[in-house]
Length: 507
Image (spheres, rainbow, N blue to C red):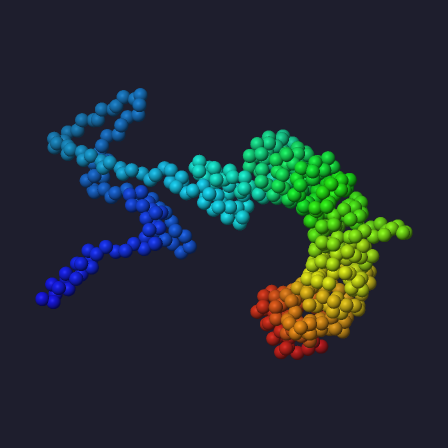
């Protein structure tokens, strides 16, 4: 009697309806029964695959092969050849009627707002092109979502045939300009960041279209462009009232055009990138004349075949207010230039909020000149010398002035190629051993390539800076062999410390 009772209990358990979970509900929503799709979960995604048609029997497959094909329209049917076989042909089995295919409008099930948000995540990660152009060809709903101007906030326009001979380039630029006449008002009405690369003849019409259709533009970069006039930049400054960042590096722009632009939009400019030329002195003079009080980033890229010879101030000429909001200044170059302590003081005498100072290649800058700067919260200081001449006389003392002033805020320090003595470097790096408040130093990157730093100094720095993640000891003549290399990551830096503590001192 016990066996039939257990069977009845199992039958009741099987017959009882099972409660549907949230996962089952989502699976039914994504691939409902009868839609022709099924779900296949994998490691990092969920695949929606079309189900194959119903399996046919062997007799049905034979009957389908024996069924005569229908002749194409306009051609007479060919009579089958007579056979000598006397057996009656088997009656053909009708082919099964195919089931209804998947819904052709499955893309319309996703709300437009959700689709735009999904596209926005992809655009934020990889940019609008080429994804939006490809998504617009999927279906009408995707085209409508990809056409939303809110997605086209960052665009890079490269001239056709860039890097090729000039033959046919003007015609190709005019053809692209005709397309931009439609794209600007219909796609780029909410454009915020625009980059033009290698435009030679049609820069003025493109900038005119931008001024007419892109009132929200905040960043403009012109790379390798020619024919940028003062009228185009002034018109753009008046039309785009939110434009606050301009990058003109590697482009041929007259200094008068840049000065006219700064006179019109200098009060709101925050970031400016320039390439040094013989006309840069006029631009820097306008900057020092307090035309850009809110400037935060200033980078002057110096070419190898030009030397910076700034004009001195005249007698009785008071310096301007400078750049009170400046946070980054880059005057780096690969060879020695002529930026002196006086020039640096004129640029930074009113910049107490400076965070980054890049003076690589500036061999005439001394620690005493840097100590007089008003910035007290410097986080990145780059003083590396690369490709210096043997005829230059480098300072052998003064490095402690730098570390004692900024040891509590410095995160990156580059002293590569400097000629400071062993004792001077030891005193300079000893400033990181005792920070105010007893907290650990913020130093995470230290470049001592080509200096006379000693093993004891390096081991003391590593021990006192637990957050040090990059250490460059290449070509350090006072270190043992095998340790003169760059260390990246906490494990490699700690391994270097262990080797310095156990290795014998070099003879």
